[in-house]
Structures are given as C-alpha cells and as structure tokens.
Figure (cartoon, rainbow, N blue to C red):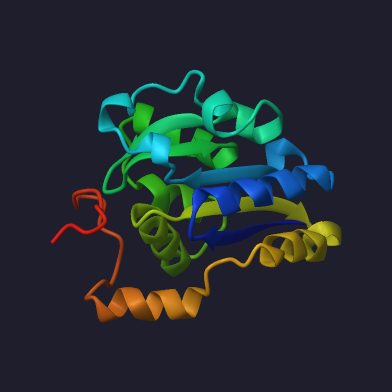
Length: 179
C-alpha cells in the first residue's frame, strides 16, 4: 500500500537537500514532489515562465531538474516539481479552484494539513511530499525528519496567535515585513 508522507521546511535549501537525499536513497523522482518559495521565484514578472529554472535553482539531475515556476493564488510565484506540481498546473490550466489545498487533499492530506502546508508555502517555506510504499515509509520519514522539518504544532500556534485560521487563496501573497 502507498501512503503520502509530507513535511514542511523553513527554507528552500533544506527542502532541496531532502529531495537530494531521498533520490540518493533510491526513492524514484516520480514519487517525490517539491513546492516552495525560492529567492528566484520572488519576481512576479517571471511567474509564467518555467523553462530552465530547474538548472538555475535545482541542479541538473532528478526531480530538481524538472522544476517549474507557477503562480499560485494567495501565494504568488513558487518553484514546483513532481506530481504535486502537475496537479497544480493542471488545475490552473483548467480554471479549477483549490490550488494548493486541492492538490494536497487529492494527494491524501486531510483538509487541516492542506491549509497548514499552503500557509507555510505562502509565508516562504517549502513542502516535500513523497508517495512511499509501506515497506519504505520508515526510511523516507527518517530522511525527511533528519533535515529538521518545521514543528507543525508550534508553527500552527504561531499562525493562530497572529489571527490566522485557514489559508485564503484570495488574499494577496504574503510579503515579509509588510504591514
């Protein structure tokens, strides 16, 4: 049986390192997804582009070579790769709503988790999601947890303390230091 294992990281570099470790451990690139903010994705004018960004921010091998740039409602421009990125791109092309929330719930995450991951990406974090057979789940979790993912409960408490309750895709993209 296959299950989805997802972790959030404070920065793109940590998520990129997790992807590299997963691939080195033999996890197929087709089973890994990455969605996150990267410094090269902060320019809204490039949100429609995608060709070549993998080489610029991810390297030349595996999943990271296929990175593309997507504009996500409520988030802004993000780098994305893998089956999660395909789901997001398909929804955007078809005019479907749901964005990250829909992609995450389609991947097997519950709605509360999907809102947390969407808000984490909105605020500059990155998410790595892996489809793993039960026989490899512990290994995948060890790799992902070894990179010190965000403490979900602590981060949710921080979000809620600032008045957040759910991801709002109609909100303007989050900008650090903006009032």
